[in-house]
Each structure stands twice: as C-alpha cells, then as structure tokens.
Length: 168
Picture 1: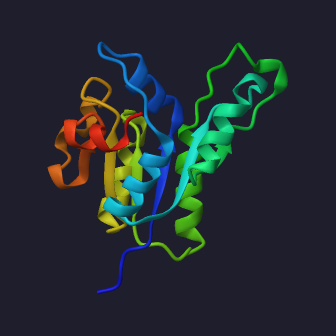
Picture 2: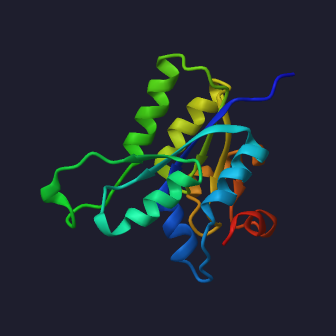
Picture 3: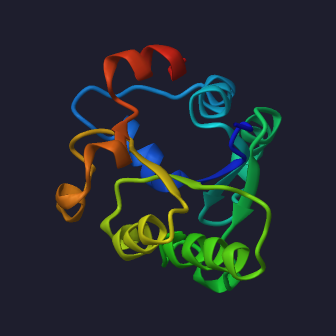
C-alpha cells in the first residue's frame, strides 16, 4: 500500500492559547511539530492559519515558514485591527471544502484545534472517509462537542509522549 498523502490544517490561535494560556504552559517547536506530522500522520502539506499580519511578529512568521508550514493569514480590514480577534475557523473550513470540491490529490485531513466550531466539518470528513485525526492542544481546550468522536479520530498534543517530541 502506498504511503498516504495527507494535509494538515492548524488553527494557530487555538494552538497558542491551548499551550501557553493553561495551568502549566509550554511552547511548541515548529520544526519538531512539522516532522511529527510528517512521520506520524503522513502530512505532506501543512497549512498554519493566523489571524492577521502584525509587523512585530515577523520573526515568528519566518520561523513557522522555515519549519515547513504554509502560512495563511485572515483577510481583514486594516481599520478593524485591535477590535476583532483573528477568527480563522471559516477560512479553514472553506479551504478544506475547496480542496475537496476541486478534487485535489490528497488522502485525508489532520486538523489541529480544540475548537468545537469544526465538529460538523469533522463529522462530514469522517462520513466521506477523508478524515485522519484531530489533534487537541490539550485536554482543557478540547470542546465537549467531540466527546462522541471515536478515540481513533483524536489525540492530544499535550500527551506526555507527544509533548516530548514537539516541545521546545
């Protein structure tokens, strides 16, 4: 059997909040995360979604790109910066559905987020046999909407064995 060709879609804000704004904060090493996704889940292309461009974060953006992620920023009106959070949920759902509609040559989707807004998408992808796994940043940030999901469809980045592989 040929090796899978999977795509990952990462909600960057959710990952940041789910690893740094918790009782015991920790930081992800982007290069290690990229290697982990490739080795464990056969992710060939990994999209990393962020709210909007902030000049002071240029070094972070470069670090994410150098690790092998495709950065995707949310389209916004410059007047709204500071008034609106960088909600990327709709952008992630749209890009996944667009890739399915255009019959892009990939096998399955890996999603990194604990946000319950993706639950309908996850259910649809499972139904279509196009879903690999949702990786929750931690147990605290995993929406209760995913409780009905079979354990074969989710994992935690905060699991001690995973964390050891991907943290700085």
